[in-house]
Length: 484
Image 1 (spheres, rainbow, N blue to C red):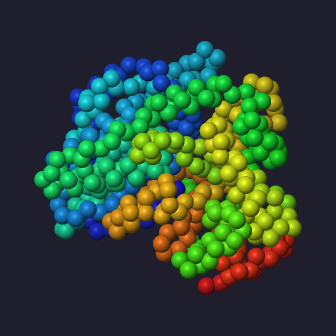
Image 2: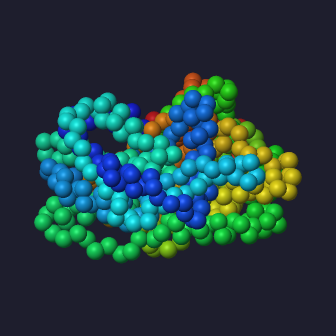
Image 3: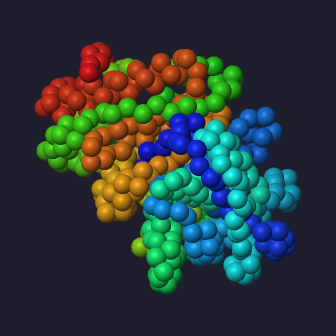
């Protein structure tokens, strides 16, 4: 995932705000949309259920992805209106809304309603006048919930010589690749229209609805004996029947708290190059070194012989899907032996675990729990608090595009997010031209804050040691923390 920035850190000069939301006629037509036989994806169903649980407990949920970037000049509202509606009609994930319906087995089912004619979708502009950063952040955070169809909003913040364009979309309809389709389609299409040209002729988009059908067709034929299900079960059983936990305390999980983000530079560009050389010499890619550094840090803190973690990856499978908005993300479980191994050995084990585990990304963990429950397997339990997730992305390599990413950063592109209740730890390592950074999402309490900072500093020390050519044997003794 491209690095996230907390929305409360979005501070800029005041500007005149224009936002886009559905017209009353559009809302009426969408609300009357018939039930669809396309199932919600496992990702969507889990997200909606999680939102309902958060709301029932009086908790906020982190759910919004908010890409934003600058464009020169004064926004042509008419052209932008065309671009927004063309985008919404093009991507079928936006054509549906969801509700709960009583199931035959007593468990509520998530039911999809889908607009029959995408041209009925019509977003219109509303002028709000000047807002400062606190006011526009509140406005963005008022994006409707995933139990409402229009859980996505568009807007511009106009200043003297440029405007900031933003999109606020609930995770229900998007993943971290959202900014690719947005930036290519909307930025380029707007520039063409505002410059007096014709709309761009884009290739056909993929279909998220087709993905949902394909996902359920695959998962319905899985059994406890299916190799990929067996892979998940082995991973869970090695962790006492559930997901792994972060190696340091995160505070009392019964005390709800919001989340926060920590971003740290692990290496500069030269150190990143040397770290990559060490990975190459070990016969692995940079990502194998990322997992190895975390595994070694975990070993240093706990003395555990093996390291377990999950990592997200895209489940897109065609060029069209890579330019399609939707939640195409699965999770790969990693099991890495660490005891009495040097960096190269740990990295090779991590790379092998990642590569061999990739097919498991197509098996939602919720499906594994369903199968375990149906087979009365009490040793398998859903995840509790403190599950660590580690992600790596090089913005200069596929699935991202280095040319697009350079333009994104040149336009001050960011992906902001809201911060709801948190009890897990997400870690995103990003390699950019200026170096390698890590962003960590964690429960915002003093204990978790100290633990996360300690783990990140220990990982940084390991990265720098490897970059400096020092990859000694791993032991349970602590390495000195890196100093500036």
